[in-house]
Length: 223
Image 1 (cartoon, helix red, strand yellow):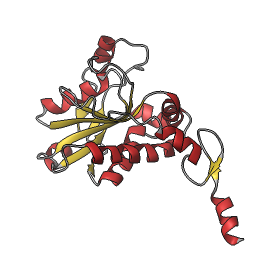
Image 2 (tube, helix red, strand yellow; image 1 turned 90 degrees about the horizontal axis):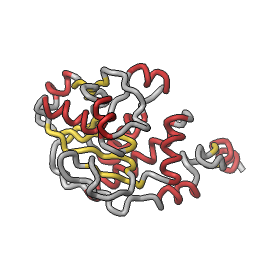
Image 3 (cartoon, rainbow, N blue to C red; image 1 turned 30 degrees about the vertical axis):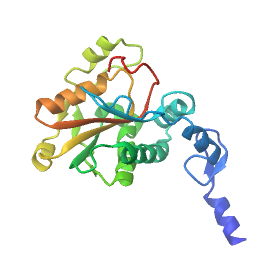
Image 4 (tube, rainbow, N blue to C red; image 1 turned 60 degrees about the vertical axis):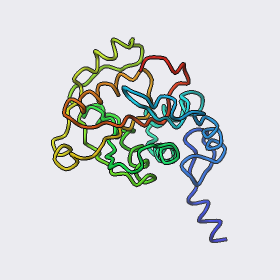
């Protein structure tokens, strides 16, 4: 009886379907999310910005990311980061390298408004899974850019030009490490390109980006 009472007490509602659950996401939604696993996680792991993806951006994964970001459900980052970490361990070609993980940052004003940076939460769970070092503030977003939605590729790149700077401690304490960037979604690649350019111009080796989801599209499409 005591166990049953404790189980009931520890139950919460699934943020995606509102069913009662003892986990972050209920078992049914977890199964549905797992069905969105990318069939070729390394399809975009190629120059100039290699990308590893756990899932396909659509369906319940798209909803999960939107709920995480816009409905104050940061806990969703935990399983997403874990699954992304497991994908990295299964497919990574860089297991022996010294790697520092850096989440794509949000501008201070936007992060204060939201209350958290979902990429940072995903990166924390990713690092707990992979054992890689995390540098939460390795990059700083110095310019508050407009929303990327609805902009063309060239408009996105212009919008993000010189939007990032490197935190000085990164160059001092991790000068021999390679950087792996983390984000929730990879679409046109404008954000990743801007962040990678900033790092490489300072002489930092960037392995690429690990994202929770990318659209399933032609491999030859621009990044």
